[in-house]
Length: 111
Image (cartoon, rainbow, N blue to C red):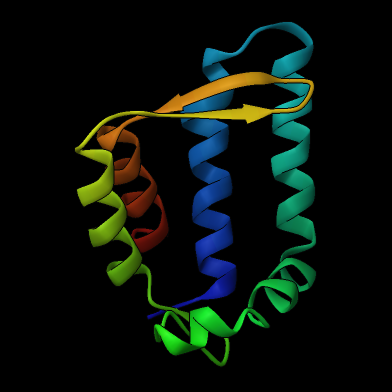
């Protein structure tokens, strides 16, 4: 289990170091800025997310801790079945694969 701030900081670091460098122009600024704002609002983001009952039922969140390893294992299993394309308004499509899942996990646990 990892504190939610560690999780968010790891994800922001992944965005800054892995995704933003692959972007160009305004998209690069917009996406990087959005990730930075999420980091500064981590407490508010987590407060909203932790109210989702399913996360408690699945034991993915306890107090301020997130079961990152459990999420990582299943997310990696799903990612190995194929890439995912995420549409982000004003940015476009971002493609993630199993390598990205592994990198995200490392950024979180090695922070």
